[in-house]
Length: 187
Image (cartoon, rainbow, N blue to C red; front, top):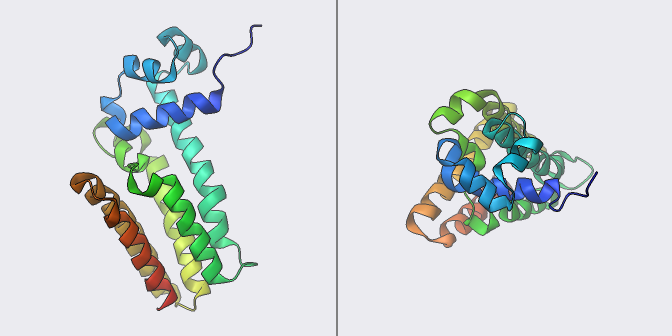
């Protein structure tokens, strides 16, 4: 067997870029192939389910990244809450490249992507809420208030990404993360 010229992780990170930019419906096989540097046949060889399989790989990759770098940190009760929050927010900055990157969950929530990936989108959003609920409870919030803070935090993050893109102003995302930090630290 010949060695693969392009590693799977490299392929998936390139697929992430296309899906973030175009959503599921807007991502053409030609663009996906071009971005990865592979021919369509090679993409189908690696992803026999086609574009849907590529999208699932992207959702899995980003879900694992967020779990390792955001959720596990926010949920790690061996670390003081303020430190967990700051590390989690720093990693959110990395995930979204300081606001330059759109959220794939949002990108897949449009058009046929919502129908195809409804469960993954819902599970992903639930994980975000659960992690922020945990950190809220660590700061002494009641169960109900921690839940409200967590949902609001997800809305603020997602909304800021949309507005940051729409106005081409990265300071909006940055200020939103600072506001989230302040909200939890000064509850």
